[in-house]
Amino acid sequence: MKLLTLLRRDQDGAAAVEMALALPVLVSMIYGIFQVGLLYQANAGMQHALGEGARYATICVPTGSTCNPPTDAQIKARMTSKLFGKGDGTFTVQDPVVGTGYRDLRVTYVKQMNFIFFPGPSITLNRDKRAYVVI
Image (cartoon, rainbow, N blue to C red; front, side, top):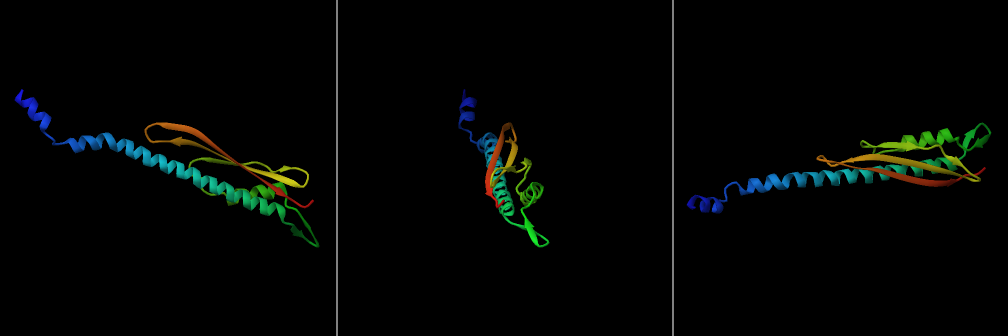
């Protein structure tokens, strides 16, 4: 009985046990915050690419004595070149949808979340922008 009482009062190693229990939770939470930060970075990159594509779609590209609006392939290439923040996700730049007086631009980002000890959900971000063009 005396030995059991001594073991209950002994505090040696208690901090190590607490750290062993709390550290994996803390590390996975910090890594999760980092993963969410990557999503915000990808969102900012998508918005930047859409803005650049919309600006480029509204300009007139000089060709000799006239000027022509940029082609869909040129707009898509411009948007693709301006993307940033990829991380380990996948960006998809859709071809512009031509309407009467406008082009709809769209970028999609898909990322499988990872929280070290367990996989997270797959997150899909979609961003659209309408660029009004002179026909």
